[in-house]
Length: 449
Image (cartoon, rainbow, N blue to C red; front, side):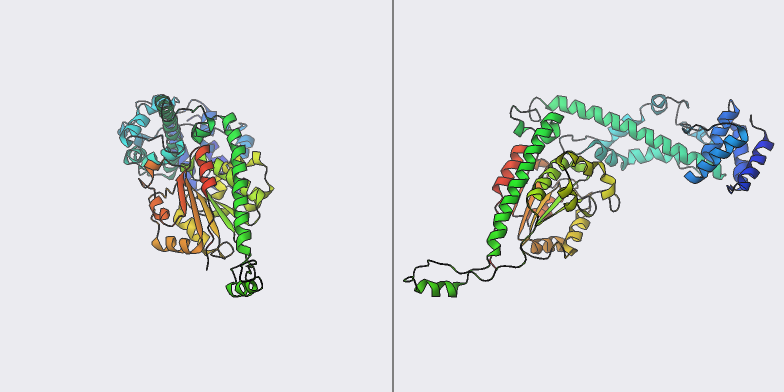
């Protein structure tokens, strides 16, 4: 050890005097650790001290200042990639411990991917979605289990935890790189036929548009949203007249020789119907969420009797945000994805729709209509029949746009079959033509009660 033992002991007293108290055994463990590691310089040992002694940011900041004052060394923020421990020697996990991630990892990420099986890149899901699926695999768990070791000292346990975190982060990065390489190969393989860019931009899958094409389609999508809003305004106005008053209409007709020259309606309905909009922005929705939000933006800009929500594992209303927002800022919603996470960040349609149904300010009239944009992939969570039944009773009209290829509906963790039976209309919507046709074919029905 390059540091003197007395210096470390004296420094522990300095820390205590400055209200930075570490257990005495932590310092003794540190001294033993530095003796075993035999690092090249005092500065290297001070770096290790800085990264291993504190347990939170406040302690790190204090320790950094004290090391600078006492030892005259300014701590660098980066921490070692990997710190060797004696317990690792028997594992034969790495051939050597170097700073080169590629050397250390060898073929581990490739083996994990091979064991995971085929990845279907025609599904509208992001690379992060596939990474999260891979991290649930037994092969991935087996690699991480290397760090499930019992240690005699708390310091060694801290070192091991940091090693595991670094290893996992680097492994995830490498897996993402490989997934992207595979996705690129998939595009090259399939682009000439099914997934190729069409001569007509309106037939191009949203997922395969470039930035300029996307911006053009987003403007057209906003216009479609305004068109849908106009449809609902007409529907709303027709309902506001109330039901036909047959008795008074017949009585008035007698004045015109029995001709139904003038119809009479009962007093208008005080509560106008609302249009409720829901857009899934979970990882599996990939780029389609952006087009969904733009459609919502167009509707909200044209029609005020509307409520717009996004959901992942719970509802968040964004009506006022869309009303104040400019079209170029819609991406900010997706950029703040974490702020819409309510639980674990995985799709939960059950919870999201339960929150919708229970909110009386939203569902206050059965004459409301609901438009949903989502793939109905629920991370293998079930959807209760009670929720589906209440959803059906809460809305006269339910319309659903699913951006996933129809051939993948109701496979894996998809629960679309639960919602199809209560929808007035549903369709695959993954390009502008499909979106346009769906909007044009929506006909808000008037339910006589």
